[in-house]
Length: 305
Ligand code: SF4
Ligand code: ZN
Image (cartoon, rainbow, N blue to C red; front, side, top):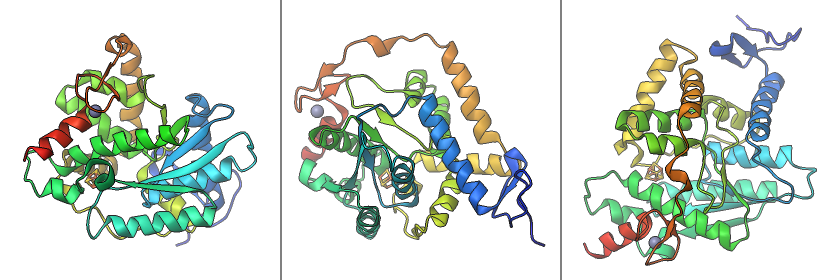
Protein backbone atom coordinates (compact mmCIF):
# COMPACT_ATOMS: atom_id res chain seq x y z
CA UNK A 1 0.00 0.00 0.00
CA UNK A 2 1.31 3.46 -0.90
CA UNK A 3 1.79 5.63 2.16
CA UNK A 4 1.15 9.35 1.61
CA UNK A 5 3.03 12.30 3.04
CA UNK A 6 1.09 13.80 5.96
CA UNK A 7 2.81 17.18 6.06
CA UNK A 8 0.16 19.89 5.65
CA UNK A 9 -2.17 18.90 2.84
CA UNK A 10 0.53 17.09 0.85
CA UNK A 11 -0.51 13.86 -0.86
CA UNK A 12 2.85 12.84 -2.39
CA UNK A 13 4.17 9.33 -1.81
CA UNK A 14 6.07 9.18 1.48
CA UNK A 15 9.70 8.03 1.47
CA UNK A 16 10.17 7.94 5.24
CA UNK A 17 8.20 7.30 8.40
CA UNK A 18 9.58 9.41 11.27
CA UNK A 19 8.12 7.34 14.08
CA UNK A 20 9.47 9.64 16.78
CA UNK A 21 7.53 12.56 15.25
CA UNK A 22 4.51 10.63 13.94
CA UNK A 23 5.22 11.88 10.40
CA UNK A 24 5.29 10.32 6.94
CA UNK A 25 7.26 12.58 4.58
CA UNK A 26 7.66 12.75 0.81
CA UNK A 27 11.04 13.60 -0.67
CA UNK A 28 10.66 17.41 -0.89
CA UNK A 29 9.24 17.63 2.65
CA UNK A 30 11.93 15.31 4.00
CA UNK A 31 14.72 17.36 2.35
CA UNK A 32 13.15 20.54 3.77
CA UNK A 33 12.95 18.97 7.22
CA UNK A 34 16.60 17.88 7.28
CA UNK A 35 17.88 21.20 5.94
CA UNK A 36 15.57 23.07 8.33
CA UNK A 37 16.90 21.14 11.35
CA UNK A 38 20.47 21.83 10.24
CA UNK A 39 19.86 25.55 9.70
CA UNK A 40 18.08 25.86 13.06
CA UNK A 41 20.96 24.17 14.85
CA UNK A 42 23.53 26.36 13.10
CA UNK A 43 21.58 29.48 14.14
CA UNK A 44 20.93 28.26 17.67
CA UNK A 45 24.60 27.52 18.28
CA UNK A 46 25.76 30.62 16.31
CA UNK A 47 27.97 28.29 14.29
CA UNK A 48 28.55 30.56 11.30
CA UNK A 49 29.81 34.13 11.50
CA UNK A 50 30.39 36.75 8.80
CA UNK A 51 33.61 36.15 6.86
CA UNK A 52 34.10 32.57 8.09
CA UNK A 53 36.43 30.24 6.22
CA UNK A 54 35.04 26.78 6.90
CA UNK A 55 37.16 23.65 6.62
CA UNK A 56 34.83 20.67 6.16
CA UNK A 57 36.35 17.40 7.35
CA UNK A 58 35.55 15.16 4.39
CA UNK A 59 36.04 11.39 4.62
CA UNK A 60 34.15 10.58 1.45
CA UNK A 61 31.51 8.68 3.43
CA UNK A 62 27.81 9.57 3.27
CA UNK A 63 27.75 11.90 6.28
CA UNK A 64 30.61 14.21 5.35
CA UNK A 65 29.64 14.18 1.66
CA UNK A 66 26.07 15.12 2.59
CA UNK A 67 27.37 17.88 4.87
CA UNK A 68 29.55 19.37 2.14
CA UNK A 69 26.65 19.23 -0.32
CA UNK A 70 24.26 20.83 2.16
CA UNK A 71 26.62 23.63 3.21
CA UNK A 72 27.24 24.48 -0.41
CA UNK A 73 23.47 24.49 -1.06
CA UNK A 74 22.57 26.54 2.02
CA UNK A 75 25.34 29.12 1.62
CA UNK A 76 25.45 29.37 -2.19
CA UNK A 77 24.66 33.08 -2.10
CA UNK A 78 26.81 34.02 0.89
CA UNK A 79 29.79 35.71 -0.76
CA UNK A 80 31.41 36.44 2.58
CA UNK A 81 31.87 32.73 3.37
CA UNK A 82 34.48 30.32 2.02
CA UNK A 83 34.15 26.55 2.22
CA UNK A 84 36.89 24.04 1.51
CA UNK A 85 37.35 20.34 2.28
CA UNK A 86 40.03 18.55 4.26
CA UNK A 87 40.53 14.79 3.97
CA UNK A 88 42.83 12.58 6.01
CA UNK A 89 44.41 9.40 4.74
CA UNK A 90 45.00 7.38 7.90
CA UNK A 91 46.50 4.49 5.95
CA UNK A 92 43.78 1.83 6.24
CA UNK A 93 44.19 -0.63 3.39
CA UNK A 94 41.13 -1.76 1.47
CA UNK A 95 39.08 1.10 2.88
CA UNK A 96 40.47 4.60 2.79
CA UNK A 97 41.62 4.63 -0.83
CA UNK A 98 38.02 3.96 -1.88
CA UNK A 99 36.46 6.64 0.32
CA UNK A 100 39.15 9.14 -0.69
CA UNK A 101 38.15 8.55 -4.29
CA UNK A 102 34.58 9.41 -3.34
CA UNK A 103 35.85 12.51 -1.56
CA UNK A 104 37.71 13.65 -4.68
CA UNK A 105 34.62 13.01 -6.81
CA UNK A 106 32.20 14.94 -4.64
CA UNK A 107 34.61 17.85 -4.13
CA UNK A 108 35.08 18.08 -7.88
CA UNK A 109 31.34 17.92 -8.58
CA UNK A 110 30.67 20.66 -6.06
CA UNK A 111 33.69 22.67 -7.24
CA UNK A 112 35.14 22.79 -3.75
CA UNK A 113 38.87 22.80 -3.09
CA UNK A 114 40.09 19.63 -1.38
CA UNK A 115 43.28 19.24 0.63
CA UNK A 116 44.41 15.68 1.47
CA UNK A 117 46.93 14.98 4.22
CA UNK A 118 48.12 11.68 5.65
CA UNK A 119 49.24 10.02 8.88
CA UNK A 120 52.33 8.66 7.20
CA UNK A 121 53.51 12.10 6.03
CA UNK A 122 52.71 13.79 9.30
CA UNK A 123 53.51 11.16 11.91
CA UNK A 124 55.57 8.59 10.00
CA UNK A 125 53.13 5.69 10.58
CA UNK A 126 49.98 4.38 8.91
CA UNK A 127 47.05 3.31 11.07
CA UNK A 128 47.55 -0.25 9.79
CA UNK A 129 51.07 -0.16 11.22
CA UNK A 130 49.78 1.14 14.54
CA UNK A 131 47.08 -1.58 14.62
CA UNK A 132 49.65 -4.28 13.90
CA UNK A 133 51.49 -3.46 17.15
CA UNK A 134 48.72 -5.20 19.12
CA UNK A 135 48.22 -2.45 21.70
CA UNK A 136 45.50 -2.95 24.27
CA UNK A 137 43.48 0.06 23.03
CA UNK A 138 41.39 -0.27 19.86
CA UNK A 139 42.81 1.38 16.69
CA UNK A 140 40.00 3.98 16.82
CA UNK A 141 41.54 5.45 19.99
CA UNK A 142 44.78 6.26 18.17
CA UNK A 143 43.03 7.19 14.96
CA UNK A 144 40.74 9.74 16.63
CA UNK A 145 43.54 11.55 18.47
CA UNK A 146 45.88 11.70 15.47
CA UNK A 147 43.16 12.72 13.02
CA UNK A 148 41.93 15.53 15.27
CA UNK A 149 45.44 16.87 15.58
CA UNK A 150 46.11 16.69 11.85
CA UNK A 151 42.84 18.37 10.92
CA UNK A 152 43.44 21.16 13.43
CA UNK A 153 46.94 21.73 12.17
CA UNK A 154 46.04 21.76 8.47
CA UNK A 155 42.92 23.86 9.03
CA UNK A 156 45.02 26.46 10.85
CA UNK A 157 47.70 26.41 8.15
CA UNK A 158 45.02 27.01 5.53
CA UNK A 159 43.50 29.92 7.43
CA UNK A 160 40.23 28.26 8.48
CA UNK A 161 38.17 29.98 11.16
CA UNK A 162 35.88 26.95 11.72
CA UNK A 163 36.20 23.19 11.27
CA UNK A 164 32.89 21.56 10.33
CA UNK A 165 32.51 17.86 11.07
CA UNK A 166 29.67 15.59 10.00
CA UNK A 167 28.80 14.24 13.45
CA UNK A 168 25.15 13.30 13.40
CA UNK A 169 22.69 12.73 16.24
CA UNK A 170 23.74 9.09 16.58
CA UNK A 171 27.42 10.06 16.95
CA UNK A 172 26.57 12.70 19.53
CA UNK A 173 24.41 10.39 21.60
CA UNK A 174 27.04 7.63 21.42
CA UNK A 175 29.64 10.07 22.79
CA UNK A 176 27.28 11.08 25.57
CA UNK A 177 26.60 7.43 26.51
CA UNK A 178 30.29 6.49 26.37
CA UNK A 179 31.10 9.29 28.80
CA UNK A 180 28.25 8.29 31.12
CA UNK A 181 29.32 4.66 31.07
CA UNK A 182 32.90 5.72 31.88
CA UNK A 183 31.73 8.22 34.49
CA UNK A 184 33.70 10.92 32.68
CA UNK A 185 31.72 14.06 33.48
CA UNK A 186 34.43 16.54 32.44
CA UNK A 187 34.51 14.99 28.98
CA UNK A 188 30.71 15.01 28.89
CA UNK A 189 30.90 18.80 29.10
CA UNK A 190 33.22 18.85 26.13
CA UNK A 191 30.78 17.01 23.82
CA UNK A 192 28.97 20.33 23.42
CA UNK A 193 31.90 22.74 23.21
CA UNK A 194 35.60 23.28 22.69
CA UNK A 195 38.48 25.16 24.28
CA UNK A 196 39.10 28.59 22.82
CA UNK A 197 42.75 27.68 22.12
CA UNK A 198 41.59 25.48 19.21
CA UNK A 199 39.79 26.42 15.99
CA UNK A 200 36.08 26.14 16.85
CA UNK A 201 34.48 22.91 15.64
CA UNK A 202 30.95 23.02 14.39
CA UNK A 203 28.62 20.06 13.93
CA UNK A 204 25.73 21.23 11.75
CA UNK A 205 24.19 17.71 11.52
CA UNK A 206 24.19 17.05 15.27
CA UNK A 207 20.38 16.96 15.47
CA UNK A 208 19.84 14.74 12.41
CA UNK A 209 19.59 10.95 12.84
CA UNK A 210 22.24 8.93 11.00
CA UNK A 211 19.67 7.08 8.88
CA UNK A 212 18.14 10.40 7.85
CA UNK A 213 21.55 11.74 6.81
CA UNK A 214 21.90 8.58 4.70
CA UNK A 215 18.49 9.11 3.08
CA UNK A 216 19.30 12.78 2.51
CA UNK A 217 22.55 11.75 0.82
CA UNK A 218 20.59 9.42 -1.47
CA UNK A 219 18.15 12.17 -2.43
CA UNK A 220 21.17 14.36 -3.28
CA UNK A 221 22.54 11.64 -5.57
CA UNK A 222 25.42 10.76 -3.25
CA UNK A 223 26.02 7.01 -3.46
CA UNK A 224 26.12 5.14 -0.15
CA UNK A 225 29.47 3.51 0.39
CA UNK A 226 29.49 -0.24 0.83
CA UNK A 227 32.93 -0.38 2.43
CA UNK A 228 33.41 -0.03 6.17
CA UNK A 229 36.49 0.58 8.22
CA UNK A 230 37.79 -2.84 9.31
CA UNK A 231 38.63 -1.46 12.77
CA UNK A 232 35.23 0.06 13.59
CA UNK A 233 33.81 -3.09 15.18
CA UNK A 234 36.70 -3.30 17.64
CA UNK A 235 35.75 -0.05 19.32
CA UNK A 236 33.71 0.53 22.46
CA UNK A 237 31.68 3.01 20.42
CA UNK A 238 30.49 0.19 18.18
CA UNK A 239 29.00 -1.69 21.16
CA UNK A 240 27.26 1.48 22.35
CA UNK A 241 26.01 2.16 18.83
CA UNK A 242 24.39 -1.28 18.60
CA UNK A 243 22.77 -0.87 21.98
CA UNK A 244 21.36 2.57 21.15
CA UNK A 245 20.00 1.35 17.82
CA UNK A 246 18.22 -1.47 19.61
CA UNK A 247 16.70 1.03 22.07
CA UNK A 248 15.62 3.37 19.28
CA UNK A 249 13.96 0.50 17.42
CA UNK A 250 11.97 -0.58 20.48
CA UNK A 251 11.38 2.94 21.80
CA UNK A 252 11.42 5.54 18.97
CA UNK A 253 12.63 8.91 20.20
CA UNK A 254 15.22 7.51 22.64
CA UNK A 255 18.15 9.20 20.88
CA UNK A 256 16.49 12.63 20.86
CA UNK A 257 15.46 12.18 24.50
CA UNK A 258 19.04 11.33 25.49
CA UNK A 259 20.42 14.37 23.72
CA UNK A 260 17.87 16.78 25.17
CA UNK A 261 18.22 15.26 28.65
CA UNK A 262 21.98 15.67 28.44
CA UNK A 263 21.64 19.32 27.41
CA UNK A 264 19.45 19.95 30.46
CA UNK A 265 21.94 18.11 32.66
CA UNK A 266 24.89 20.14 31.32
CA UNK A 267 23.13 23.40 32.10
CA UNK A 268 23.09 22.32 35.76
CA UNK A 269 26.84 21.64 35.84
CA UNK A 270 29.14 24.45 36.95
CA UNK A 271 31.71 25.66 34.39
CA UNK A 272 34.97 24.58 35.94
CA UNK A 273 38.28 23.31 34.46
CA UNK A 274 37.60 24.80 31.01
CA UNK A 275 38.86 28.22 32.18
CA UNK A 276 42.26 26.83 33.20
CA UNK A 277 44.85 27.93 30.62
CA UNK A 278 46.27 25.15 28.47
CA UNK A 279 49.99 24.35 28.31
CA UNK A 280 52.08 24.02 25.14
CA UNK A 281 53.21 20.54 24.12
CA UNK A 282 56.97 20.31 24.67
CA UNK A 283 57.40 18.35 21.45
CA UNK A 284 55.11 19.97 18.87
CA UNK A 285 54.19 23.29 20.49
CA UNK A 286 50.42 22.70 20.12
CA UNK A 287 48.00 23.60 22.92
CA UNK A 288 47.80 20.66 25.32
CA UNK A 289 46.35 19.78 28.73
CA UNK A 290 49.68 18.19 29.77
CA UNK A 291 53.38 18.70 29.02
CA UNK A 292 53.20 16.38 26.02
CA UNK A 293 50.03 16.29 23.91
CA UNK A 294 48.12 13.06 23.31
CA UNK A 295 49.20 12.83 19.66
CA UNK A 296 52.91 13.24 20.46
CA UNK A 297 52.50 10.70 23.28
CA UNK A 298 51.24 8.19 20.69
CA UNK A 299 54.05 8.98 18.25
CA UNK A 300 56.68 8.59 20.97
CA UNK A 301 55.14 5.31 22.08
CA UNK A 302 55.24 4.01 18.51
CA UNK A 303 58.83 5.02 18.01
CA UNK A 304 59.71 3.07 21.14
CA UNK A 305 58.14 -0.19 19.98
FE1 SF4 B 1 39.62 5.48 12.41
FE2 SF4 B 1 38.02 3.93 13.91
FE3 SF4 B 1 36.98 5.60 12.10
FE4 SF4 B 1 38.32 3.43 11.33
S1 SF4 B 1 36.39 3.47 12.48
S2 SF4 B 1 38.51 5.49 10.47
S3 SF4 B 1 39.91 3.30 12.89
S4 SF4 B 1 38.12 6.15 13.96
ZN1 ZN C 1 52.51 17.50 20.75
